[in-house]
Each structure stands twice: as C-alpha cells, then as structure tokens.
Image (cartoon, rainbow, N blue to C red; front, side, top):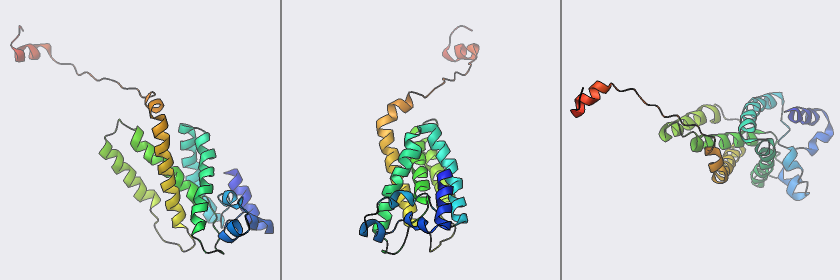
Amino acid sequence: MVLCYIMSFLYWTHPQGELLEANPDMVFGKNQYWRLFTSSFIHGDLNHLLSNSLMLGVMGYFVNYHYGKIIFPLLGFLSGILINLIVIWNHPPEVSLVGASGVVHWLWGFWLVLYIAIQRSVPMPRRIMKVMAVGLFVLLPTEFNAQTSYYAHGVGLGLGVLIGLVYFFFFAKKIYSYEQWEQEVNHVDDELVNEAIGGPS
C-alpha cells in the first residue's frame, strides 16, 4: 500500500513517472518490460488510488493472513505482471494501463474459489449462492467508465480463480488437516426408547 502511494505520487508529480506506466508501444516496441510490474502500483488520480486501496487493503490482509506472504503480496503482484501483459497485448499502442484493479480482482478470484472448496461446513449450494451474491454486489460495476479497463478486471478474476484451484489441488490435504469437527449427540429419553422397541421400562 505504501509503495502504491509513493509511486502514484511520483507518477503525478514528476516527468519520470511516465516510465512507470505500461502500454504496448513502450513494452513491446521498446522492450521496457519493467512497466508490466510498475504499472500495478501507479494510479490515474487520487480517486482511482483510494478506490483500489480499500479493496487491496482488505482482501490483501485476508489472503495474506490465511495463505501467507508468498501468495500475497508476492504471487499476487507477480500475477499482476501476467495480467498487464495479457491486457495490453490487445490495447492500442498509445493507450496506457495503470492501477492495481487487476490484482484486486485476482485476490477476489483466489479467495472466493477457495471459499467454495474449503468451507465444507456450509452446504455446497449455499456456498455457491454466497459467492454469486458477493460477486454481483462487489465485483459487478455500478457504472461504466470509458477510462476503466474492465478487461483487466476479468483477466485478474479469472487468473485468481485458476491459481486458487491450482493451490487447492496441491494443498487440499494440508488445508483439511486443520479442520475440527464436533459430533453432536442429542439426549434421548431412555424410557421412550425402551417403550418404542418393546423393552423393559
């Protein structure tokens, strides 16, 4: 988060900040591949930064706390490189991509697919309905803005789901080893049981 604020401030106030944004001309034409990484940390304006900061902070905390630093921030922002690469591959040469929206949606995809896979105490249909409700409420845009890359959102979400599934495939046994199940036994009146089976009262 601190890095996002620092790099965004540099992007807004210094001419050298243009070296941080990613577009096809600079990345593919001039081989400036570092832009695929740095563009996730810079934002177009303060509103853009603040809107991403909320979700990045909340979801980053949850994913980091439950799955560790290797998953986030390390794998999350490395995935941001791939997200940016896929997105600008189809961009016009002069259009730049900035912001952590792709990483934010990657976090949501990773978290939600693992919720479905792990939370076995909740019936599967209810898990799916919860994920769909969250997706509609949080991830579906309320308005469409020409400056927003919804393609980056979709790519980030899809890649997060994919990596979440791969993570679950390799670590399901370890994850389930932390489960604690309690068997609930309801007390039954012995006299009623004996009466029902015809035994002595």
